Image (cartoon, rainbow, N blue to C red; front, side, top):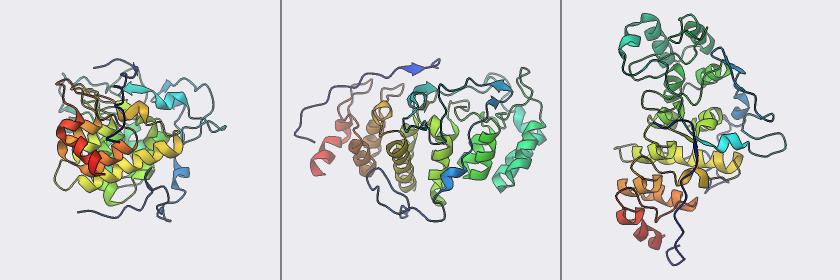
Length: 318
C-alpha cells in the first residue's frame, strides 16, 4: 500500500437531521470469514423482532419497501435508509433541567435494578409502560429516561448484554437511534462496556441494533470512533478488536461491504477512527481499518494525519 498513489481525501458525507487479557474470537470477521461461529448462537439473528410500526405512541412512516431483520429487502438489496448518516435522536428531558430527577423516582430505579439482574423482559416493559411519559404528547414512552445521563432501558440492557431485554424493548417500539445526553446510542454504550465481549454475544446485539451503525453522537463520533478510543483504556483492547470485527462483519455480510460511508467519518475535531486508532497505538485496529479502505492521509482539524502517529510505518511493515 505504501508504494501506490495517494488516495484523494474523502468528501464529507451528507448527514441527515440537525447537528448538535486476550480471548479467542468465536465469530468471523470481515478478514476471517471462515472462522467458526459458536453453534449455541447460530441462527440467533432470527430472533430479532421487527420494529413496531407504532413507536411510543407515534406512528413511524413505512419504508418504501418491506425489509427483513438484516436490513435487506426480499430481493437482496440493502435498504438505502440503513446506510444513511444521521445524528442520534434526543431525550425528551432537556439536560438543562434537573438531571437527577429520574434518580429520585423509585419506579425508574426498580427498572434499572431489574435490567442489571437480567429479569424477565416483558415485566420490565410493563414497568416502563406504567410510568407516565415525560413527554405529555405520548401515551407510553418505552424510551423513558432512567438516570442522570439520559440513558433509556435500551441503553442499559445493551451495555449489560441483556439481549432478551433488548429484543423485547425493540419489539415494543424502542428507538435504536435514541441517544443519551451525549448523543450516544445503545450500540455505542454497549461498546463502552465489556459485558458483550465477555459473553461473546455482540453479534446478537449488532443484529438487533444495526440500523444505528451509522448514527452519530453530538460530537459527530460514530460507533467506530468510540470502539477504537476504548482500546486506549487498559484491559479494553481485546474487547475493542472483537467489537470492531463484528461491526465490520455485519457490514460485509448484510450491507454489501459498504464501508466507505462510515470508515472515514470525521468527528468534531476532524479525527477519523484511523486517526484515533493510530493515536492510541493499537496496530491491530489500524490494520483492520486499513483493510476496509480507511484513508490514511485524511488530516484532522490540526492538520495531523494518521501517518503522524505511525500508520505509515505500520503499513510498510505489514
